[in-house]
Length: 99
Image (tube, rainbow, N blue to C red; front, side):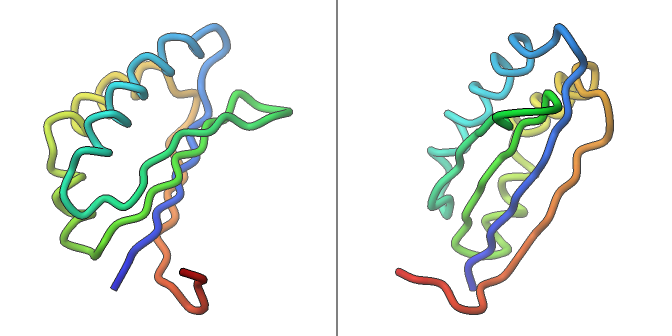
């Protein structure tokens, strides 16, 4: 069963460029992983310096493989110093999804 993960990361003021650089490396590598249907990074249009990862995986095994990957772990270490709070991560399963 497919799994959609949405992760929200708030970034410290002045750290946006460093965060985006680290995130882009993770995004590029993640898109090449087996079982990843899409992996996109968005930035909130107004308000906080909050970024949104929009991810779609073939199944829970693909999610686990992503979380165990070297590029995801490296990004996590980099983001820890750039984030202003712990990320909010929401994993979902489909109920009624268009193809």
